Length: 246
Length: 246
Image (cartoon, rainbow over the protein chains, first blue to last red):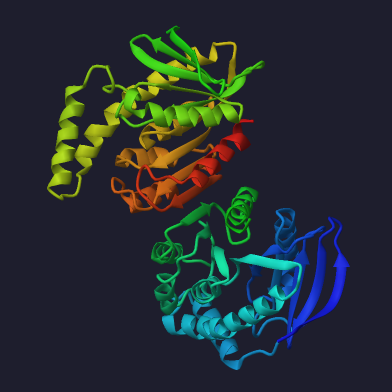
């Protein structure tokens, strides 16, 4: 599927930001100010809130990547932003909200219904985006994957050989099936955990970290909630990509 | 108690290494090549194996500290090296060995007998060393504490106000009483955990990290055993001290 550029602007630090579509999927590509040779690429994962509300955090991560000499790109997740909602996902989200509000344990069937179809649909889309992006002359490899729904990161790390390193954010519900897939991950991992993340099961996050098959994996836990990742942790994640993509 | 310098040598990278004694306690001080103004100090904790066998690892940490503009110093622990053995500690060590070899759970009474008297004796000694070291014109503050027996680091962080940041290594048995003291620690902490450390109870290490009262604390877990801390984790710890001591 070819990539259509839909917009282009130069940010104040010289980073080139281009909107694109891949079929019906919108995305954004950021490239460093003066990329004379093909640069490595970091795929920026994000939450299903949608690209528009996530934009300020995405552009901050993209600017950091560009400062380190990397391009960054992201695409809208299925059922987010202006993309068509999936009825089953909306139902699962309602079930989740009801369980959380009732103070109940969120059952495996709700987690599976919410996450597994999302992973099944999103992962091939990110792979298609990778095909299209890497056909641009200014993008080379290697490719890193950073953040977002951790189950998507796990699946991508297993199935996509062009991704050589992943920085994951332990901060969402993880189906049991994804724990099994985690054992098959072998690329270097850098996992951020917010110790007091209200939306996160800390023990599940530690169990998932333990499950990863990678010989090289680092867990970095900091105080604070989901959006409270300290500057130093962002720096450490950036250095992880510099070690593995440069 | 005054500090007596007993030896002096210039290492190949220009770091000045001086042996000293503080009463009957031997120690080592390392200062950066050209320290014109008083420099911050990092106290290098270490295991009870003794300064001599620990020297290669200590000097590597001291060189890194010096490269970052910090002095580093360490003293022999009670009952280690050439210092007199304590009969009760030897007994506790034998009990520990017996329990481990029999595959038994190491009882609280063994941990308490092994660690608490060591903490009680070592902490005032490190404080006396700090008094003497900070009277040298080339050493200023602030002071950091790094590594070694984690229970000593916890107690020092609670009782010694000159220590403003601590890098701790989760890798030894921790008495229940120290968990209580950990709640009173408020300085920034950087805690290294080796995920597969054969001599370490991972869950106890996570519980201790959780117990620390510090608002700013980071846990960095990596694969491998006690001596397998990767270069990147050493770099992250060094950057922690640079943030807090510079």
